[in-house]
Length: 108
Image: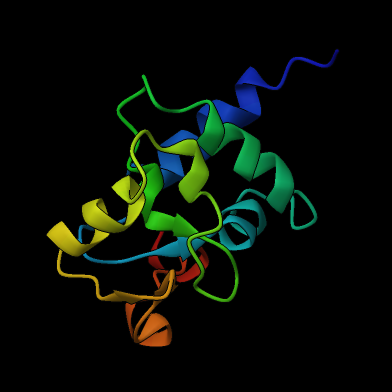
């Protein structure tokens, strides 16, 4: 099995820079790391980030859906974390996704 820890660490560094109340996508993180076709690998990194002080709840799919919600403890933990930061979520979808989207390619 390939060791992805270096890639995961780079993903975590980007994720830690997402401002509170903003969201980004798996693909946007992958693209910012020069690995545009590795959105799924970013998802795996998020799945393994729970003990690494990473705000994984701020990473959603390209349509603003909470696709990683089942990796959080508790039924609505991901949604609750986002709502605590002022992000409105309806039916597992970020409301005003385009306005709240944080693009690491532009921001970093």
